Image (cartoon, rainbow, N blue to C red):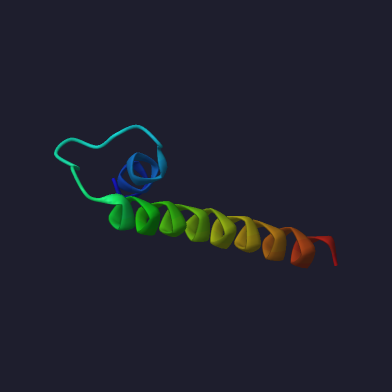
Amino acid sequence: MIFKKILSYLSFKKQEGSKGNFNLRVMHGMNRISILIFFIAIIFIILRNCAK
C-alpha cells in the first residue's frame, strides 16, 4: 500500500487536480529527486554491508 503511493508520487505523469504554479512543480521535482537519491543510498549501504 505505502509502496504504491510512493511509486505513484515518483511517477512523472500529471496527477489529477494538480494545477499548481511553477514553484510548486519545481518543489515536487526536487522532492522526487531527493527520494530517489535516498533509496539509492539505502541500497548502496545494504550492498556494501553485505559484501563484508
